[in-house]
Image 1 (cartoon, one colour):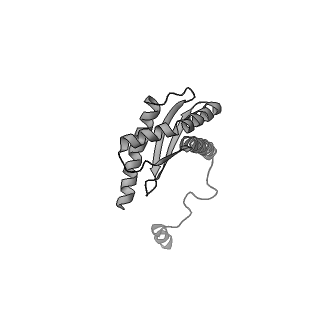
Image 2 (cartoon, one colour):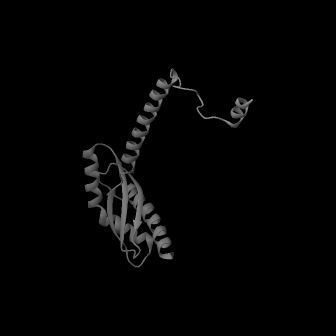
Image 3 (cartoon, helix red, strand yellow):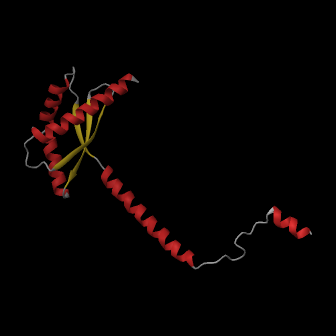
Length: 146
């Protein structure tokens, strides 16, 4: 349990260091508007996965991925220098798909709301086929016996 907590704490620190390194240390024209969204560290602290998003065209995203791959050693050195741990984890950069998934889900919710609105319009002029409340109630049964 404590190892998982320690791994999460170190991963959060790695996320901060990588974001700062990309912003202030890495000088590569191919880097686009990069946001480091998350970092995960294995329980043995040997490998860190860094998730990022990039604003731009698909070509700019590919260029940013190449720039991050090129700067991986420099960023890892910065992480090792600032973390002060015995072994500096290797870094793997992965594009975070959460924004795209979120946009897809928002589109589905928008379609659902439109379908609900259309159904509500159809229901406005509708009437019941029988009575509004087809169930018999105890007070109605008592009145019929008299």
